[in-house]
Amino acid sequence: MQTVMKKLVIIPTYNEKENIRGILSAVFALKGDFHVLVVDDSSPDGTADLVREMQQNHPEHLHLSVRKVKDGLGKAYIHGFRWALQNGYDYIFEMDADFSHNPADLPRLFEACKNADMSVGSRYSTGVNVVNWPMGRVLLSYFASGYVRFILGIPVHDTTAGFVCFSRRVLEGIGIDNVRLKGYGFQVEMKFRAHKKGFKIVEVPIIFTNRIQGESKMNGGIIGEAVFGVLRLKWQSLIGKL
Picture 1: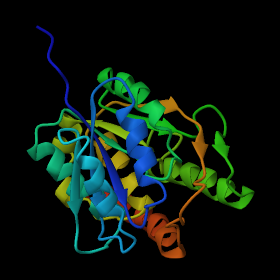
Picture 2: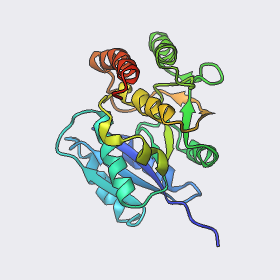
Picture 3: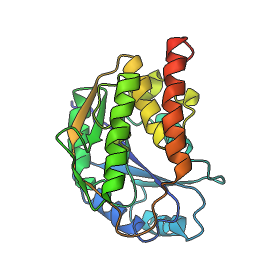
Picture 4: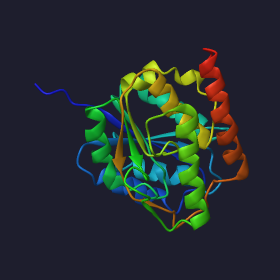
């Protein structure tokens, strides 16, 4: 008898009312029995209310957790990871709500992760596959990934990628309660910890499309945290305090 692998897609949200219905509908249209946990940081635009409406049609597959504080993308994902582990999921995905990550790529990430420990939806493993980003942001992202790869030695082209599939054993093994970085630095830290633990990471080429609706959460503080957070991770690794 074949064991059914439980799959959970974690989607963090803050003011995503323009996108949330569409992204959830796209995930539930896929084959593969994907469940979704929306982690909403008390969006004032009513995002959580729209999720509750959709729960009526997907009571077993759609879950909602509303946090009272807005303290960064990383903290929202850690909250979701804990929920996923407590509820017995075998494969846990990170995905944005704004369609920059194509839900149709979820099955590809899953298939790749079954033969590894962690799969990364990569913008840069086969060139630069980014649509509708200003050139300055493309260059910033591309060279930031190169900087991280050089400093930390992570064997991943897209080190800041946020479209990821983790096997349960990765989240159990890396110590998610010890993860400190919050923005893009969080994505780097998760990959670095997995790499240092010896988990196999594979990249799946994707096309990343800039959001059409809603506002980007990118800001200078997030970039600064990533730059200096990488150096801190390197130092902690060198002195055995990671």
